[in-house]
Image 1: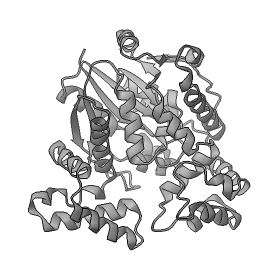
Image 2: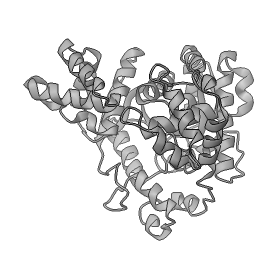
Image 3: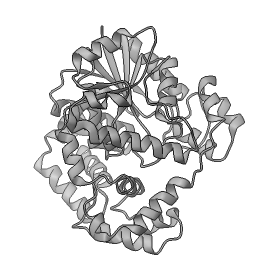
Length: 398
């Protein structure tokens, strides 16, 4: 069995995602496609449009053979830790030869060269980066502009110019670096993204998931129907989400927590006074959007602030993240192609900690239980936000 892994959010599932699944299977000559998918919340610090079982079912109906969950603690982490957590899961999947991902670049050689550069930064580059950070830029922007300056100066690195201006290039580079860090002997495959992930326009053959989410918020269902598979549309048209519920939960948490307690949460820049800034912004705000506008700066992006709010909401501390990194890998299976139950048999051989239902928590390493409980807490919270009664706790066979 030759397996290709795909790391995804499918929020929601689009024709572009279907194209990626088809291309990955064909171009890597894969017998099996296994997706490692974020569960209830996403890397942008937002709630998923559909719950994890609905999205997993759609992916399996439309091209994947199995979908497993990326634990929440990694799914809502910054890009490098998101990638590390995803590759940690990939490391125990059976017979993985390739990791496939979409990128704006579409050239795996350039992405690999960039990953090597990041792992072996020249001293001159480090000085440029230090100066950019000192100017008050957030780290991603400082890094991107520093790469461009260095690439303009040295022709051997000219292909790297502009590479960090695009989010999926950045994630792809993080995947390559994480695989190296974990010592994984896998190959990489990428397809060039045909959509614009920053656009809210429903246009072209493959509009982005972001554009579909934007249309959903404005209830443009007739337009959406043209751009998603009927299976997906049947779920989307019945969404009853209260879009403000998560905002209210997060703002309440930020108002009620003390600045001292806020210091312990994951990714809080205590030295930079971020905890104090967040407390002041929360105290002076009536709405969550007002809070975000007051809290964000050039250094602290909107996405980072949203993620930190989720860390607070779910009590994800630095200590909890450190413990997660120390835990052995585990695989929580969300959906399987009913004709490919052989994959489950192979998975049990390759991974010591496999769950297909919540009750399996008693069978896995005890150190993993807090991560599994956290994922189910997130699932319940998403049900509350989406006004859903989908309390499924077991694998779906499609």
